[in-house]
Image (cartoon, rainbow, N blue to C red; front, side, top):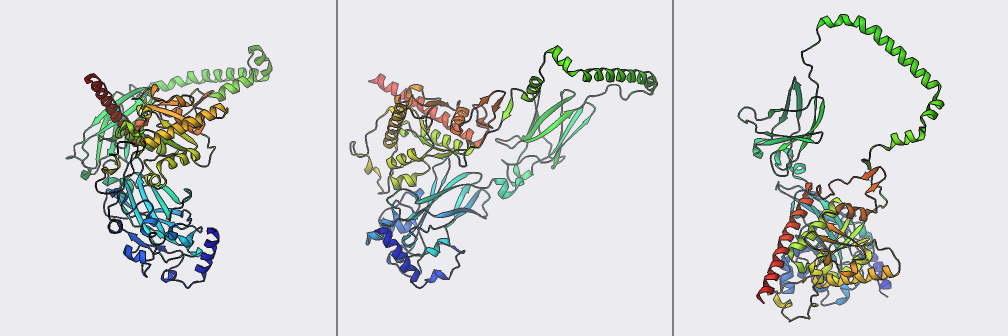
Length: 605
């Protein structure tokens, strides 16, 4: 019935005279207007596309929304436009299309500002009431959200699906960081699919925005010259600008498993642009791979090569040696003639030669082509899109454990070619849909499911509303409370366990499901129902986890799969890996303190 109503409504809308916004070309971008929420609710002129502020929400609803969510609240169409007429917010509207993120120039050298643009969908456009745009940092909890509403009497024709709508600027974004932006069409339908569109993007680095000479963390020497005079190796490089405050440098040279470290302290009073230093105790006839960088934390290293030539002792050959050529030349010709005769004899009898030595030519060729046992095997791309991984966990073990899970998701998202689904990053969708419904949908749609096991999974919290009655009313300011995910995550783990049991009983593939523990947990923390699936210890088994996600063998006959920076030792070289290591250390300390406190409490009793 509603589909028939939708078609009739669009036909009537196409027949109406165009409004004030119809004068705007289809390709022009529609920017938000300053208009009151009262104008939007009454459907007055001049408020076709309005930004809704946090102050507007407080006046309309009588309480403040959560600060991080700005002007966004769950079900904004029903709360702000549908109180008088519920039919305004009951029609299906599909997700926007062509979501783009545009960087905006600003004066602040330490942050970036972006503006989001999109196009509405054809489906349900006549009942479109607005958009909600949220932005969240990957690996963090910061959220920014903006709400835009059409006035209640506005009806967009299908031709307006080619219009571009824009958000207000999102300022203060950290440089060199990754973010996720989500654009949601309003009203949100009861069918929780296809009502929003998400996009990942990265802000510029400091060097990209301000130039290398203005960024202490990103600066590195660009010009390096190496000269050898006798046994002396001299390296000359350009110094950092004085405004960066870099006073010391260092270089590292590697060869034959040995490492040579050189500390460099230039004298700025002599030369402020370049400096030269000596490399000592290098072996003759050896090629060295060297690095040079500022003596600062996380400084970028510049790589260069040093080839140490053989030093000919005693200088050049004396002239008295030249007459010996008269003796050397005939001897050399005789050796060459003997070699030619021997080569001709061998080439005329190849079959007899091979038969006598019992060596097969194909075996020789195979041996020559096999190479060493460290030949690198390239990763084949079998899928057009990265695998989708849902991470489930328990928040009962405290914020330090939750932070470790969040940093693990950020590392997998950035450096393991995998799309990660984590409720910490989709708090708006979880609030809109409900935590349990969100987990069920993600379990169904994800390619893989990873359960982070910890002692908290064995804890069975009471369902919301079933306790002593002292939990929900703690929000004194009357703001919205999304609550803990402890109950829903434990229920989701139980649901996953049931899925694993059914799949095992039916002889189905169990590769979709995985379990993992951090090194501060134990294998006993893995629930019994998840012992049937593959489980890993992180961060020791990062390479095995990568192999599982991309269905590729790490080793094969005569070759191995090389994965940059995904190993127990190498992952900390990346900023995301270092953050993951720090989060695991903090969680380990917090877990140890919690266990000691529990033991002490039992002793007191």
